[in-house]
Length: 411
Image: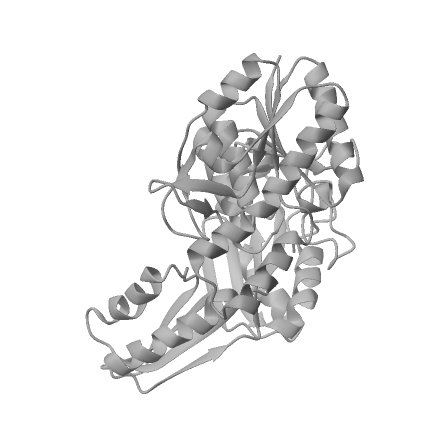
């Protein structure tokens, strides 16, 4: 007998028939003697509908009320799922985040999980019930409903798997696993059989939409085996696990991109101690994540500061920058929303030379200018003009021969 946590996304539970199909899949596992915890997202399109409704009420919806609204989508799905299971003759119970006691901090719309009380789930398992939990939501210390941000149902599932010490956490989606790049952009994209936590963390942070980055962080921290697979087939998916020697032999595992970023530049900033802190502290206090940062010295006493932020936070960031630029006596500031970040990722970069050089050469041969570069031990990212994104992805995928299972190092 195993304890299995399964998460199904919005496309997997898009209508009553699909919910019934997912219920049958879960019940097969339960009949085999496994203890089942199922985490569900809202039905496809529902969260977007709620967002539109909220913006009809307020230009910037009140965060607390926004969470109250968005959390209702998952409540519908879990109740329908439990009904489907009961109609088929098995027992199930649906639970909201506050009933499970998924305790979070108080940051509405972007809450982080602090602790999970597993006692209620274990009690229902003792009664041989399938436990169905609403994804994406929790409860703060002052008893307010909170949501975890987009992709939060992945995080709910992995956090529950970690807290329950589950044997596996299966993330079901509309694709068959993690691919070497977006199959919608490159028809040579290949499904990866297994990938390391670190590689998946980089891919998730750099734009790959298969898994939420916080879910991978939980999995790595608590060594939860993750299996990303399709709801609509029985095909083996991609395992996200600890790094092994085979992974290290590949210089690059995947190419990803992110069009949801914007670039901000503050020009002719006084080059004095503490200036960077004055720029980035108010941005951080607003909960805005800054990614790539470049500082270009103009002279002995002036510098330019350029950085990227999520596109969704661009307007708020620009409002903050307008005030900061005035306070620090910068000459001007500007922004650009027509950018994209293209990245290559692979744990093999640690022991293969020339990977970054190959990337730069390939982009140059395609006439693609690089405006910013960011690196880590296992990734290289380049900020380029958005219109060249697909070309860059396909060219890099070809250069690193990612359509082959055991590609040779690029020439």
